[in-house]
Image 1 (cartoon, rainbow, N blue to C red):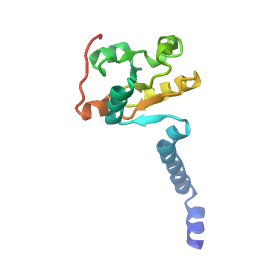
Image 2: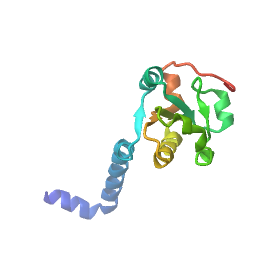
Image 3: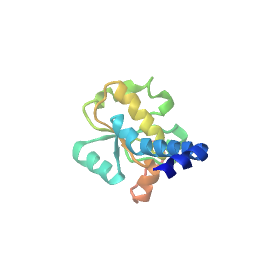
Image 4: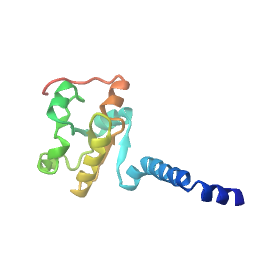
Length: 143
């Protein structure tokens, strides 16, 4: 124990960096769960789509969406989500899966929907990159 205290006193900057990295890694793994966001792998998302008629909302910009998206996804860019949330009202009782390229923007969009009272909100973990890596199909252009 004395060696640990001595190490910390001699290397306080290194110790603080270690603590910071540890906290950030912990937040990365449990932060979404604490905020009530359910991350879904592509396989789980397809089950939710097929068995519970889940709706996919792609929060990327339209130019990104047109290059490839999950079939039947609704495109509402995250920058306009708060203003266009009315488009999702008819889906309030259904599961909603938000997607983007990597899962970061869609996680933020999940928070917006949660604050607006949507309860069955999910994030596509890894986004379209994970979807493509699972060899699932993409649609191009407008649906």
